[in-house]
Amino acid sequence: MRLTKHVHACVSLASDAGSLLVDPGVYEPDSAALIAAAPAVLYTHVHPDHVDAEPILDALAARPELRVFGPASVVAEWEERFPAQVTAVAPGDAFSAGGLSVTVHGGTHAVIHPDLPLFENVGYVVDGRVFHPGDSYEAPPVDVEVLLVPVSGPWARFGDAADLVRAVAPVRAFQIHDAMLSEIGLASATRFLSAGALVPVSVERLAPGESVEL
Image (cartoon, rainbow, N blue to C red; front, side, top):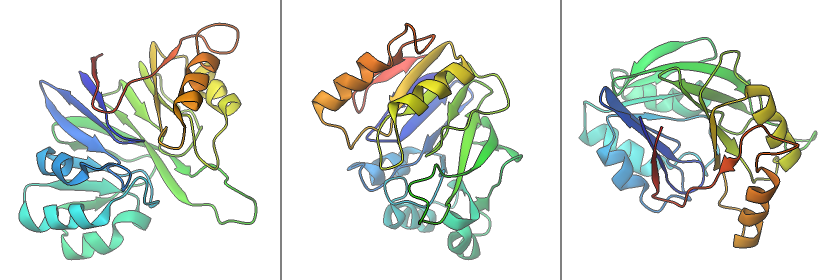
């Protein structure tokens, strides 16, 4: 399987069986092109850094073969307009997207502040190997080989990221949700999340557009 890191929390996954795209949001300048090339798109939650609504709506109208999945808070209106193409999902669901198997986990966004509501958020395990948690540090109740680790955001902290890596104990891990960090901050995340006392494996950093074979 090939993992491609795009901007912020957006990634694509591809294998001989198929491919899909996760969380093409407004921080991703090529979201329209990425969506146009994807047979299936998954969304973890409603925040705009994970959802760029205009290009996905344009793509749904132009490409009847496109399939879109996400929690109801993201896709409910799209599902009404494109019921054959859009599916609301919740923790415990399992489905096929773009030829790859997907299971749904989590349910709640990490706490930003006690005075703000808890947002719906799901994580996805793709082909039983790769876990994208969205905006959450909740470990999935299954073993995964590859973990995507959020490293920035108003709710994020390196200590919680380290605890997620320790709880999951993946073979490999990669930084995501990183657009809010400067080069200094990205380097700090890489140092803090290097294999050693805190985490069993280094959380690797990929540049936007960089791919790795898993």
